[in-house]
Length: 555
Ligand SMILES: [Zn+2]
Ligand SMILES: [Zn+2]
Image (cartoon, rainbow, N blue to C red; front, side, top):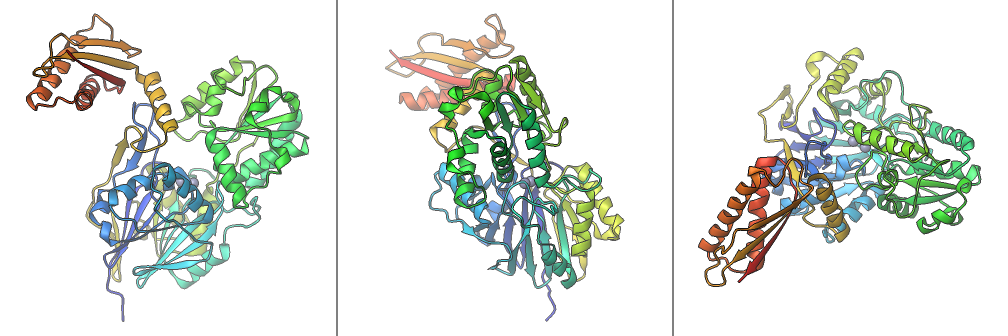
């Protein structure tokens, strides 16, 4: 029987941008979703906490989703999962490697989605999902348990590479499964959706294991305390920092919530070996001899309120940077974070400490393959069709050119966009009709632990300040009996003399009027309405989201 169905590959995120990767793979009306990622807001998206792909399409098709498959545990691949699950109204099967699954479980737990199960899958394991047979292929990346996903239906096999590099000497000793990729190629791969992150870099990426000796070399030149910052999920990097510290007779201390959490998960799953005697608790840092310690810290991206950023601002409870300290950035800034990283570096210098970045010494290796590795992937898998993914438009274009260079005919290369489905049937491949795609902004943490809420509040205050609105209403009819009082602090570009304050008073009165007309009398509810109305007014006028504290008093 010849296959008659249409395979639809619909990217909802990750094309034309770096972040929020999400791919809908559909056959016979049944869907497997590969990755549910998020993106962090750019500095101009003030007051926005997270950016998610617009997954309205999935909401409409919720009943058709057979499975969600996660390639690896990075936020740009798993971060949107709690939001997606809450909106779907049902929980499809969820699969990921053991580390991915453990990290995702912990994330779902923070979002109070504790009843959701995430299935561990190992490399080479396969499972059925509707019309698809799905197989995980081991890849190398800057986090353990990174997989490519091969989805086979009766039309052929689609390979979504996830993030990858070809590292011949990975820290865990298990390189990408080149043999399996070649087999997929030999059997005839229908479509390759490949990572384009480093399509602009010629040559081959550095091996992760080349970083360790460089760290050792740099450590050897440091006389004082050493602080190394890297991604908390880069377990193999943390391992190499620990090993280099051990060689030089130094102990390590883990600083930052996510650093401690990820190292814990990594230890439990055997991805990292930190002998118990190596660890120094954060509270012991100040009393520990400087030349005997390496602090491993979060904050390599200059994230607000991260451990390193707080150190740089002289605001960290345990680590006070001073003369003689050396801070090593074992990471490069993700596009968009350069300013925050530079500011952090500048502040560290001001405190008297020294800074070493990957521009000085190769203390970082990218987790994404360079041009020759992308070509190797293309040559191994010999796809009939190619769709570059995971990159801005420039990188998608460069990846297409690499595909052409290894002999893929231009008409078989599909440079896609979010929302544009690629449709393949037995007669060929073409783009179909555009579906809704775009961004969803998450403003605030709707569910989460108190710490997250406190962090959010502090961030709002620091960026946009606060408005306190005090309204006095009559006990009889709920109507305003005195002009509302408006107090504000730290709101950029607003001062007392500003006409804006007068208009804001009118907006407060209007809100109270509306509530009175609707006979809303309960103080909590009144304050909620007032909060929303004032927030909307302020955002409309100032494009900012200061904290709004409404106080309604009845007399
Ligand atoms: Zn990644
Ligand atoms: Zn990624």
